[in-house]
Structures are given as C-alpha cells and as structure tokens.
Image (tube, rainbow, N blue to C red; front, side, top):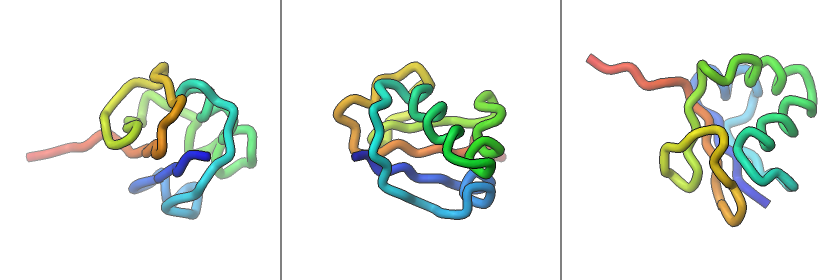
Length: 82
C-alpha cells in the first residue's frame, strides 16, 4: 500500500488530494500506468507526464525510479518561481 498525493491541477483533474493505493507497480511509471487505466480522470491527469514532476518519500525523482518499499508518491506540476 502506498499513499499517492496529487497537487495543483493534477488534484483538480483527479478530484482528490490523496489516496492509499494497493499496487504491484515497481516504478513510478508502472504506477502511472496502473492509475491511468482506472478511469478517464486519471488518464487525463497523466496524459502528458512530461508536464509532471514526481517525488517518492519526499525526494524529487524520475518516473523510472523504484517505488518498492515507498510510503508516499506525490505528483505535481513543475514549480515556477520569480
């Protein structure tokens, strides 16, 4: 079981800020594939992963990163600053 957090427009498209997911995924990309297959709102949120950033257990990482043993995966748009 892993907690999946959604921020900004990702949360708006999916409709929840957080959920616990039972998954057999071994990488972030595998998790995205599983989530996208759930229903249209997930597919829409993950349609272009180049527009997303991901953190595993609060560490920024890439979509090929392992999630084995992870407690939390967070998806959010790139941060902009001034």
